[in-house]
Amino acid sequence: MNRAAIPLTMNQFGNAVLGDMFNPRSVAGAIFFGALFLALASVVGLLIRRSARYVEGHLSDVTALRFVSTFAQALAFLIGFVLYAHLIPELRALGTALLAGVSVVSVVVGLAAQNTLGNLIAGFSLVLYRPIRVGDTIRIGSPVGVVSATVQSISLGFTVLRDEEEHEVVVPNSVMMSSTIIRVGPGR
Image (cartoon, rainbow, N blue to C red; front, top):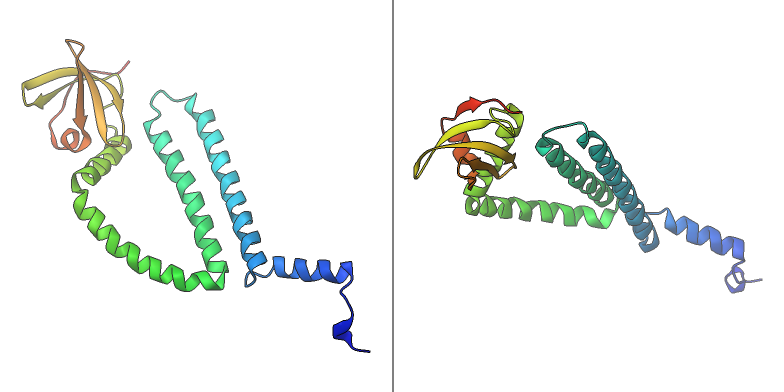
């Protein structure tokens, strides 16, 4: 009797499909693992968001928390993608080529966005070292002279001040870090 002519039973068919599903070299396996890593990264991202919302209620200045939360969520998806790409053999070669391409693009983007990146790095410094806080009254030099203002918010790119005439003054963080700031009054 020829075994090739015998149709597969349901049990044999199920074993063949499940075997392919857990094999990262097969299409079914690649899709399964892709969905699994996406689901895991989504759960980790959700946990990070919920934890950040819980902690946010206990803080007066949430700038650093929001940045760390967003960064951690992006990092969770990036780690998930890297692990997935490392598991699927066909994506390893593509990953090497993408890494070389990304390095060239990062140099070009870095040169094109020097001011923006400078503001971002200065924003990190403002959040990390906290030379000023939301609610502080400060004096800082501006194109129209010395401005006395209250710090309204500090983001990673800009610091928003409110002057004595209730005008909103938006100062790039690179200017905040390179200027001499006089703290006139402490925060609330």
